[in-house]
Length: 177
Image 1 (spheres, one colour):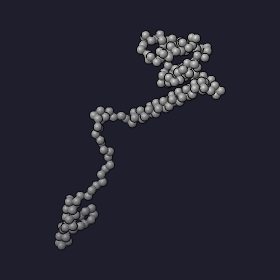
Image 2: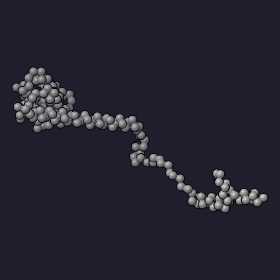
Image 3: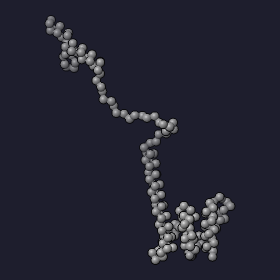
Image 4: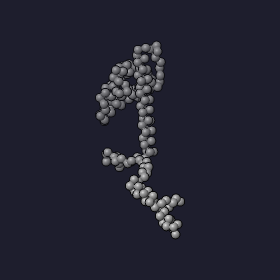
């Protein structure tokens, strides 16, 4: 019977037999000082600062699409600036150093298409541009005159910039002479 009494004072923990007093101490210490488990790493959900931000969540695909569109726009702006710079250098060479100047059809076309835009062809280059086109001949001259006349005739229809109208008048005056 002694053996049975001894077993009554014992507690088993997963294949390990421990006296009851030791088991009580272990259990009481676990309750007092619970074992800290590692916290799971989770992304914290932050509340949006603006009420509109939380409502519109965009997918990764949409964000990538926006980023790509922005990159394309930046690239387009860089190429436009490069074309503008080349055309204005072309015009400057025509005016100041004819020895280095060489006719380039693409530059002339760019100048024709953008001559009424005050941003692309600044006012300091305008007189040089008028001189350049006053020497033009053939189809180029006809196209310039038609565009200028169309702008002036369209003056009553739409409210166009005054700069555009002034430039069209300058072109007509210089090309008709």
